[in-house]
Length: 280
Image (cartoon, rainbow, N blue to C red; front, side, top):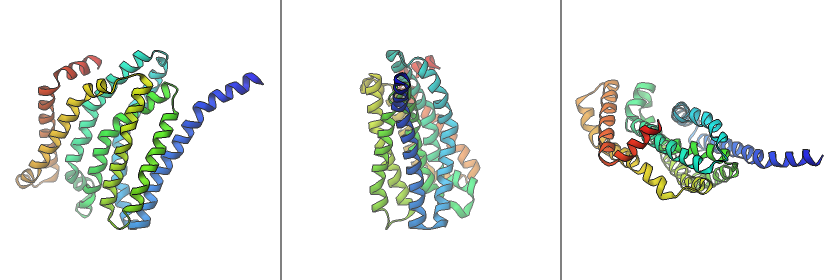
């Protein structure tokens, strides 16, 4: 009985936070849907749902599967914290170097994506998918944090983060009632972004990583992504005047984004590029 009870307690310490995290994550997602349909109506909920589904699908394809598979590897080396920390730095920098720019590029292409996928009647959907794509650029690495919490036997930190996430959303639900769904989405994404700050702090504490080491690995890619997004935003109107076809314009802008991003990274992040290729 004593052995069974001690095993149950050990499993409960790990399982209860995981269960609580899944429940809070579900509540956060469904509460946003409920607030949108209550404040703005069913038609607006359809617009909001289409935008969020697109972001969630791409997130799953690009990052979530990798994180789920990576958890198996991480648990095998969980006893070796230095190796776990080194692996996190490599995977995080690779994610920021490759996956985050994809989301930033999709945000820059939001008008073209909205028109091609949903048609002219849903032209305003780009005001919903752009903030969510930019949020995805930040959250794609946050998936790795969750895997590392679990591998290190600290899923309770993920529970705390989801609790903080729900708390951060409450002011948005209260103070955006008089606006429109686009204002709601903007502030909702800002609230979600705020939660990412303690997420990286917690994972650095759990793995024994210095914040400056993490920043040193990812800052060239973040800076390059932001600079490229700013340049594309400035050029977007002029390109729209030159190319009227939405699909062709999207392909051209995407190609320009890749070239500018690659050039920026080559100029300011040669060392980080070398480390990323060595890891791959």
